[in-house]
Image (cartoon, one colour):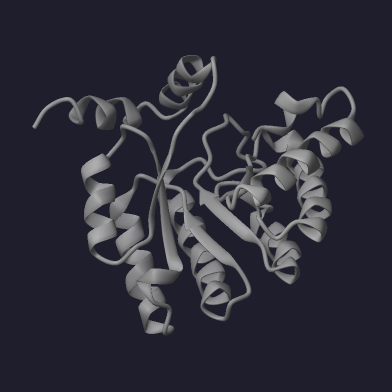
Length: 212
């Protein structure tokens, strides 16, 4: 769920009440509500929403973006809540003053955050979801995590529907819990196109699924 689509810019309290109701319905259905993370101007308000929701619902997760330089501090803030975190690289066009812009820097930040989260998952203090299509990075994280006695079963992998589907199946066979993110509702197509536009490499991944 994107908080701005539930009124965050209009009335933060109304947005919380919408999310609170949805989290309750998700719990009754035996599933989870995940808060998406939007541009950098929404990080603080989204973290505040998550803190309130997590206090009332055990089945609520949040997305963190590795390329933001503030994210290590945000993760430390969340860990006492025993959070569920879907870690992504980040795709919004943020300035270099607040975000890493070069892939090696983003990958290094992602790996460092993933290892902190993985160790928390090992100890039962977090749920760790790697929201990336970069399977090489996932494998490197798993190698380092295993040296800290973190099993692959503690490292979930979340990928967009239709992108690197065969790789997701391979990772599942290798012991990673694997999940597919599917856009639901009348606006699924513009949402999917926006995801492709944010990271052009995903276009190639999607096209590859059309051919054996």
